[in-house]
Image (cartoon, rainbow, N blue to C red):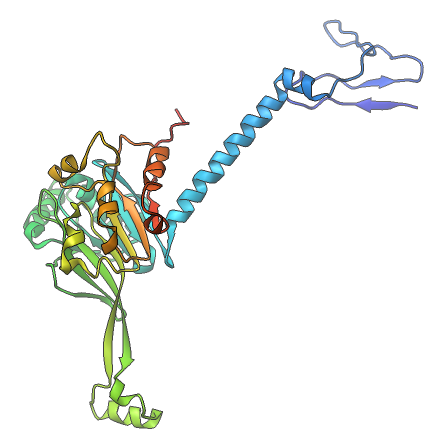
Length: 359
């Protein structure tokens, strides 16, 4: 009876096949001169032996790394699915902020113009700091490069002229066409994005002029006085020119951009605080930069969310714009300090942040 064995474990050096007979082990010669002899000891596959060899340690490290990657991916997936909306983007304080809602074909702020934002037809700029508006010329130019329709860009009225000058400067420097529809949309004004979707700005509080945006779904509801009517009677009134429906606006998504916590106490922000999804900032998370420091720089500390949580009625909250000094694990830890009722709603946007466990 003959048997053969090939060692394929990458942790062992490769060896040629050998044959074993009932009585002896035949020698096999391989340059320069190697002779294999039958082992006098059986192969030790005990736990202690494997442990000492480092084999189990390697497996353990691989499993740990795999679990970490799965956990990280889960955090990212969670941040992309909020109340039926796919929310994508990156927001690192002082570096870049761009948050995308594909269902609305819109981006809030443009950061450094991430590739995914180019496909969005609408862009809402909250204020003129470079980490929020710096990628605007690239966004417009890239859409033109790919023969896409000119985008509609909304800005606070106070910066419209400066944005026009910025675009014109790039037209001259690059000798290129940069086509866009630039809309100065003021707080309280309404713009129709499509027949079932409108947007309104609301006041925010930063160190320079700023505003947030609320996107509303639009639906028509039959007026109470006509509910008892049958289909033919309703149709008859419609044809006669009678307005038989009320227009219902439901706040779907609100985006603040950079702001202090003052917007939480402003009655005019009520729609932002009852939207299905609130996307707001929490730049500072610890005692090294306290609430006073945050307010001085036009930002919000996570402790202020705890303090004013009773005003927040949103179903989901995406926290953004964390300072780059923080790691993913520190951000997650800070979120756990929120009240249980609020914490259950909160997802931190950690895309682009480093982990304590990666170099």
